[in-house]
Length: 128
Image (cartoon, rainbow, N blue to C red; front, side, top):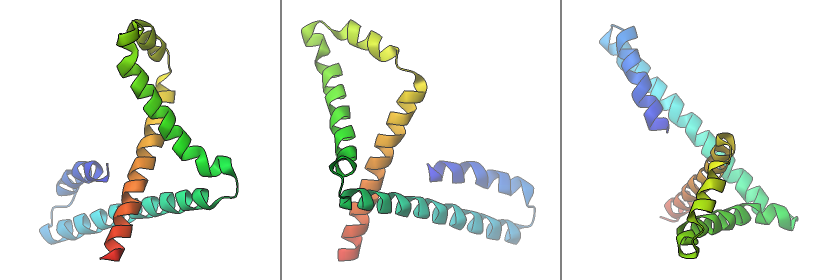
């Protein structure tokens, strides 16, 4: 996502700053700032996940895995529903879910997966 933002913003910088050197410096600083911001967000997500995992509450420790398992269950049901002649009912029910709820689920699960990927990648990078 950050790369998409950079791709959108850099052409605007080209039009706003006529001096080649100033433009290059502005692009460099803008890219650096955006990447630092993204790194800070990922770090905060990692810290939150680590705090959740270390929590004394079983619900707090289990919330993310429960959401992932629920999502996998829902995907499995959608795939298997035609076998039980329930595809139309399933798709109708899913069509009734508000878009804002789909966004919440998508961002939550996508963010979790992204944060786990970053966490594992950083862990592997530190080992090397």
